Image (cartoon, rainbow, N blue to C red):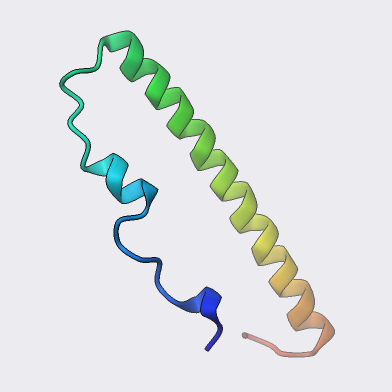
Length: 67
């Protein structure tokens, strides 16, 4: 099993954000936070899609269907 296949440790940045108290934030700060999180989601999706395409190309090259 590759190290990349192991689950991420709990306590990563996303877990910490999810547990943060939002009460102290103003509406403007919350709007800004939402924009930053949406940009991060798009960045992660783009990376995921590139990784998937890279994996599919490698599988095709090495003739490993369904890997």
